[in-house]
Length: 88
Image (tube, rainbow, N blue to C red; front, side, top):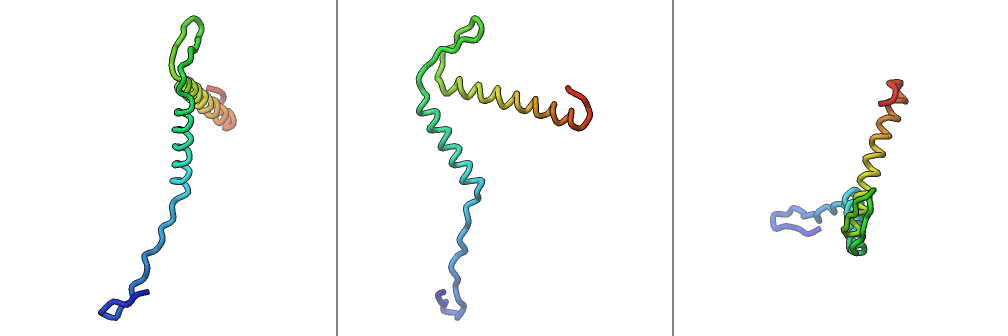
């Protein structure tokens, strides 16, 4: 502590803790950027009779989004069935 000319003591500023959520978000962003940078090669994706050409990271991200949507829909149906409302 240091003394001011008026006789009051000055305390050191309190250390601010970094929220765990912020650290987790930063780690996830870093992983995402690393993933994109390492998977930039172009690939052909065949869906039925259509061929789509694009970066590998975009294809994998698209599959991730489809998986998340399927999980949300199935999870919602399971919760309704558990409560007794039936499927759908």
